[in-house]
Image 1 (cartoon, one colour):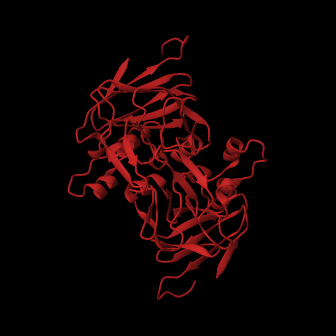
Image 2 (spheres, each protein chain N blue to C red):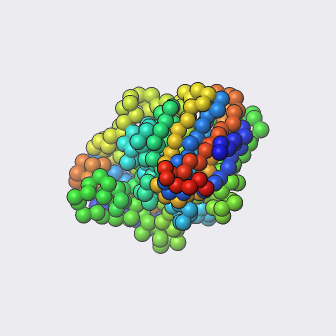
Image 3 (cartoon, rainbow over the protein chains, first blue to last red):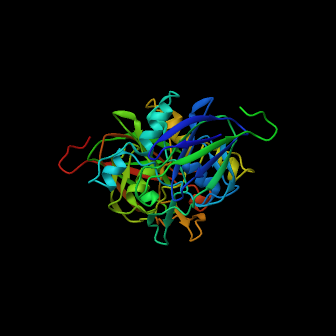
Length: 200
Length: 200
């Protein structure tokens, strides 16, 4: 079953160990911020810093692992038609909008949408850290300068993450103009059972 | 008054708004991991992701600001004889040592040392995130590959951080071989009062 996340919104759901989360960009050029907690210990959560450390690269592709703050593997990327994502930048938020777009009316952004979605699982706002920004195209040049460019994802592109623990997962259709080539589109996702398992 | 942090150890202390924290590398080629909490709200802490976002560069130099998860400025770098630091990688830990140096006996590392130091202020371990790794020389090449190189800091080099809020600050003399050119040295620090203020 394919679920749709409406433009500039977010949701949270359970993904169990062995299941696969397929994140789909149905129209192209749309970022989806991903974050996760260990379902059995909500003080264990996704860690950009640990993942960058062990991945030894800014680029996460098929075979790359996303680690928790306790250095446990949360997800492995097992299929990826884009192979261009970001794990440096925090989800957009009211404060991000104030900083970068001071003339616009701020929206909750991916941070606000994730905080609201995780609140249903009694997860406090300050545990929501740097997200894995699926399909986000962030360029770092030779001087270290960071630039946000239009995503390389085309309509129907997707990334499949295999869960290595039971998790509460948050996912958004990103709200920031620059990250999504200034058009806000939906994101789709599908939870696929492990081979041989009964569909839940 | 100059304080000394012994090799492969860490400490925590209070730095108030307007005070300056001078972090000194007395022998050269030694990394010091820095982390901080808002003294009045310990759910507000240093954020690599927010800082990278607003800094728009991997490089933090004089004038750069270090932000909290709530997008508030915690520190501004006001003087810096090195201008080569890292804000990508998590502090070394028992798990890091197991991952990168499986044949060595693991030590608590900067993460363990910070967790212990912050425990004195009733700060839980899982609130210790990606540190600002003062003097750490991390190269990112054009393919995104991350490499840890010997620090560029020479004996007596230093960086001065001006506090923009009252904070509980943790600081280490880093325990990882590769980060410190395989010799473990002390780190020194000094808390300097704002001009016109009485020395505390």
